[in-house]
Length: 300
Length: 330
Image 1 (tube, rainbow over the protein chains, first blue to last red):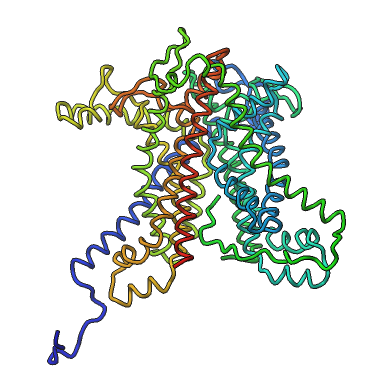
Image 2: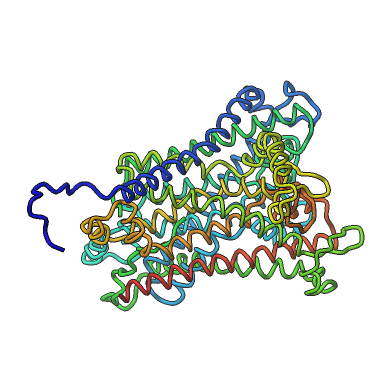
């Protein structure tokens, strides 16, 4: 093609008409997809706040006796479920977070590229995809059945949630350990430190913000899980502060059973529980965000 | 969670032999502790398979493979065919994938290629919010808000497609009309729930496209869309497919939301607007009252679900692994 010599100004910015329209349509569709995501999120948060706020009161959050389904909203409350959720989730975190971090330390610091380390890394990835109800069945068969009637307890629920959280913590901690620059490790070895000392005092502290926020996200996800608790904690109507013996209850379980019941009071209590649970999960998420934003040292 | 697609495995410092051969006891103890924590993952996975297989064997010994592929579910007569539930699980998660994938991939592209970085962070936060809304809250919203609202829509669609060959089979009325609690409602709720995971995994993959490829496309005069198709897509294709598979596995295992909105009716049908059932939903709803062979069959269903989701996730990991090997080789 010859250069058109009598046309000195060529508009370099302008892609062809149809090509440009196509580009604009595609960009428009991407923004539209984001709006599509916002709609259900907005609707669910609106409904939960609008309907849940009516149910929430000090008595609702602390009363130690869950009323029967038929009762109207004014009586009793969900204190038992709030206590149950906090205890079960906290103990699950106590089990899963240290083990998860240790697992990640093994994969990244000790295992290196050996077959065992790669297998564990691969399998922890796969384990993230194991359905939560299967974790519940697993703990039911290995813990609840052998212990008979006393097997149903907050402890069993914690085990099930810990199984769920473990691979999540391993994955996020592993990613964070990968970001720690090698020269830190090398400098510490040069000072004569042992490997465990390097890991505990240099590597982990420099990845701590990412590990903390990853763990908080895992805890937030586990706190809202119902399926692992269905057959592990039992269901009682009064507060049981003892995690290690006796059946207990939790917020997700109360939402599940009240959602299926036809009474107005039960429905309202379900919305109240939903609001409480969402607030707990969102608080964990925002703390994780703040930790990431304020204290991150190494990023991609 | 995430895949380590662009994770550079070139590390492992200090693996060189230490100067003194005998390492202190505490040091070796810590290594052993870490190893045990790692092995715990394998132990749990093996434990799940072994314990559910052992508990499910009661059912399997009487029903055999015929039981897995039978669609007859009759608790009174100890007939526990699993196919209706496998069908429901696959159908609802495929619906979820069909709805969620275009949205998720678009948002992932929006985040990485379109909006400026300072806008990306708030959008990611919103997607994280979506991810931490508990399953049971989606179920509650689905059963109390979405179902009553969507049922008349189903009814009008059903009357609209009445008599049209294929559409009638999919969206038409079945013998009992249409229902708000149905395969489709369940698929819809699942699609909302798996959008965050597909978005974040796709975003991670798309973010690894080399800037030089993108700049090259722009330098050739490509529009942004042409750049995405020419430079971003070929590079991130397999990663996105793997993200979709992870989302599929998530949708298959999603329990409580499905248990609340799927309608709890054991049937295999082409109609989408009628009540159905899925594996996790039936376990959640029936396990508490079950005993004997019934309970064994439900645990067997759990094992089937475990195996299906493990396979889906293995394939997802395998696709990612293959593509990273290939791109490293190139």
